[in-house]
Length: 206
Image (cartoon, rainbow, N blue to C red; front, side, top):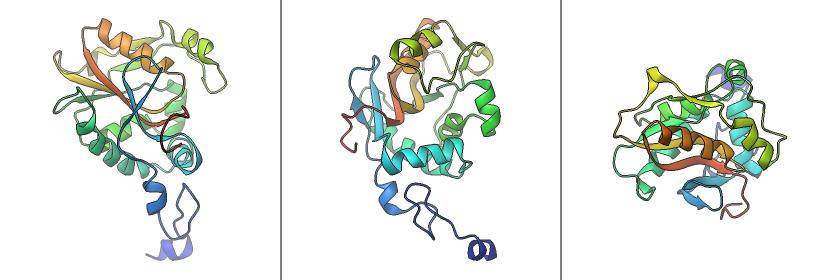
């Protein structure tokens, strides 16, 4: 296409020209690996570092929304490998702050969930008052979210469904713990948390 001649694609992970995503960066995302010490059973596909981090940021903050299909395929491949989840789980995307979602053109995690082809229920939302957590430590993140995650009545999954909470990155686990607690309090069964990346250094690709 003429547009590719004038503006050739570039891998958002490493900057390689001529490809929308290079094989080396795609290979950074492997099968789901347990993330220890963050509360509910959490599994990550890559470490939040290097090119994998750049891919997530390109998708989340830099307008590369076509990567939803890439991440969706990775999630689809990972779901059958999650222990204790069973067939045909429902994905529940972790919520985003309303202002952040508007700036990004919608919930990026919801986009990944839908691109995976799995049944998806955007059943969680943040109440007002949740701050950007980027510069908060673990205790501050927990306090920031306490009592500020709510169920969205119009988007709940079936009552007996096996749920997998989906997120893009887990750091302290505060978001995962609060979301899982709210879902369980609503009578839902959360089998696992799946995240694209983790900031924990224990990940084998880190």
